[in-house]
Length: 164
Image (cartoon, rainbow, N blue to C red; front, side, top):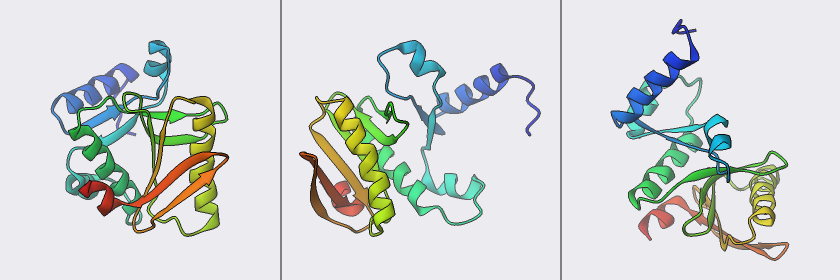
């Protein structure tokens, strides 16, 4: 679409943008460095206002902006941040191996379909990474503590999590 020519050109441009601190790229968590390098990446903008105004959106994407805000807050703590993909293909938004945390971001957590999707990913990831002790779902306004298959999952609103 952009007629850049090759994959290497695209990679170079992405590197330039990341080196200029316009956005950050996170890798999928894997024990193999090679697997991390070839897996799809997730990109987060340094400025959510810029991301929102420059990005192509057919509708307001508050959920993605929430996820971006969570990433930026985690980044302030200077932690190594990954996303996690289970063997079954479910994705957890953030995995922090240094503090043993899985973090899922979901704007709305009131429908049973959304709860099932978000909790299924955390449950599957927790079974694969048994050393993880904190399982968190960050939402717009919901707050509760769940226990699914002896996995404690804390659901907290974004504002409360940011203020901790």
